[in-house]
Length: 330
Image (cartoon, rainbow, N blue to C red; front, side, top):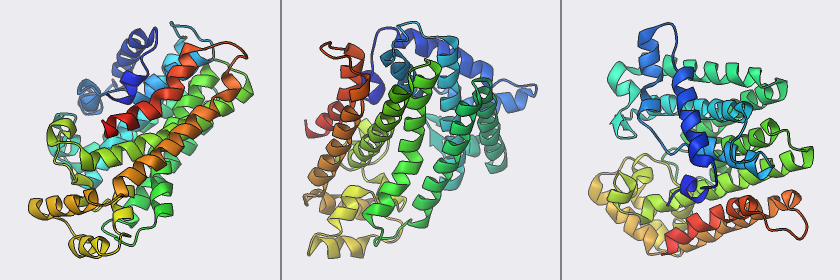
């Protein structure tokens, strides 16, 4: 299961199909070559988590199954920011593939990939501007937060002394900030009352934190078939996530793990490091932290609830984080 599956609500499938068409339109330009490169990851597909969150948030504010054009455009703007960041991430990571196809940098080179990412961010900003100054300023601020989160991750690459606070700050910028923005834009484009918009903003951030912790734990406990890459890949890249950081604090095992980390890992060393992490309570405690964020996300939705009435949309949104984390325990 993924977050988009957990967000299945009436009208979401149709809305995401409409978003897909607008994404293809938004990545088309006057230059055919740039259009080809910029549309490369759009054509490769994806879960469209962030657009789904925009639509679901708008629906939670009474937008109905068939959302407005403004909601769809907000969903497109958010996804374009996400896609632009992926182009840049792949250059920094020297990645060769993304979503089952060659990465843009592997196919066309780093310079072209960077410019294509910039083009996507520019198109996102243009669309956001059409939705009003608040949405435009919000998206610009979010792009800055994404950069800060990425710098935070790069700063602590291969650093076994990375603190949990540094980890949380990084995922707050890299993941939770954009999910918070997606939920907020859903409320804004649905013209929701201000308390509801603020509640959705808090919800999006908290569910983003829960989602990233889920994803980081999943990198250690899932199989290569599920992940599409070897388990423990984050450690290979020098990204030490919450379960790894907690395993490093376990007496004895932490010392053995420290001796393995701090540099790129070959497959046997990666597997040994992964086994050490899994032998500790670090995974269970990380899942518990993820649940705390999922609880916070559910509580954030309180201002949207109507007294005495059950709302399917809100119940679905509130359950997302726990449904993901339950999957790790099955």
